[in-house]
Length: 289
Image (cartoon, rainbow, N blue to C red; front, side, top):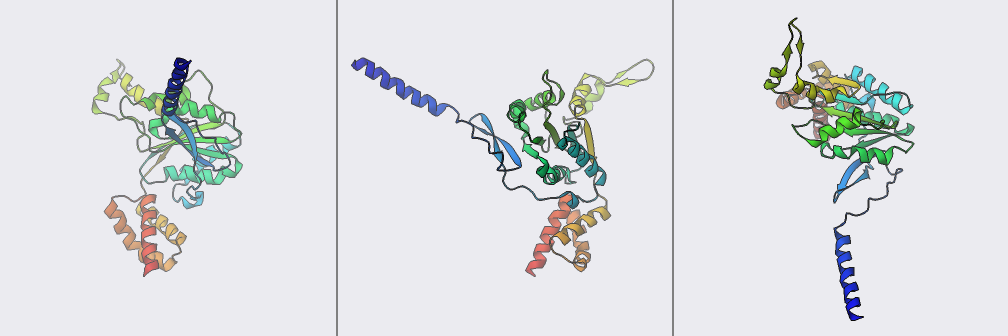
């Protein structure tokens, strides 16, 4: 009997240690807590973390990207209304409003059931698990991958290809993928890639396997939207919008014009992000004067 008790005591101690090594149970998802979520990992187990406070940017705040705004808003509106819509790749110059446009669409259509899940590039291999969690929900989900690009051999590349259009399972009707990138083809392109092009006898040029592989991921997005650097007048109009947003007058806007140009010159960019940063700085200093 003593040996049995010793055995049970030791077995219980082993079980306690094993339980401590196991990942904790995923927390229950409170779908009413937020309209945006982040995919997080805890001891190897993924879960959705509500984001209670999100950017309040609106579609009207995004200036001088009307064509891009119309394309993304129309696609999102179709998706929310359960009409056919495409996965979207937004590419181009940094700071021109790519990610802000997606957040503005969330603010515009969250009341209609739109929700957003932000996923880091390193967690893209969990896309199947994320879709399983939300496929039966009544809401419409945008899976958002910001500043997306891959190096050779990264695992998330193939996972994203499968999620977009490469699985035997049909895509879930209530999920779309919106991704932003400064790189059109998402993978690095090298001069040596040109050596894989093939020339036919009639003068045609066909890309080789290396190039085909690099463009295949981008082609799986149904909608491509490109963003471009702003001209000086466009930049200044965005500065004026944000200065008005921070309570400045028309006279203040005119006074700030020269400083705004210097600010952009020092940063080597005339982007919406630079305009917003300048307006925050200039209006804050003015309030302290």
